Image (cartoon, rainbow, N blue to C red; front, top):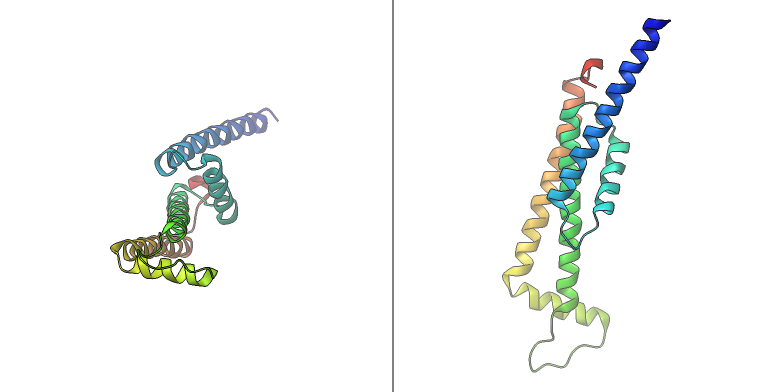
Amino acid sequence: MAISTNVFHRIKKLQTLRSSQNALRHGLLARCLVLEDESPEAFRDLLAKYTDRLQPADALELDVVEEMVAAAWRLRRSWAIETHLMDTVPAEPGSAPDTEPIGRITDAFKSLAASPVLSLMHRYETRLHMIYQRALHNLLLIRTAIPSTPESQ
């Protein structure tokens, strides 16, 4: 019995250490990705949801999941930027502002399309989407090609 109790305590200590290291790691990740006006709690919540859903088995899988979360977080940010750009484009000089919602959206789109801003946003969104998709593909590939072992967990 003493041996099994000792093993239990050692496993518990390792789990506690791993948990505290994950918290430190996730805190660093949040500091690297979350801007001053963004919510670190929302980022940690997103990371927790991905981690809970995907259950990374080891550090390699956790790296890939974090890459997915980083891309998802930045993609959401780019959507917010695009929305703000569309909402704040002034009417064309010398033209009456459209009173219909779709008309204002159309005018904003035309105005942004004439500048490099919208193209840049779309390239950025495409890049982030590709990073996310590649990470997801790699996670699935890792799980089929390199099965996790108990000692790597």
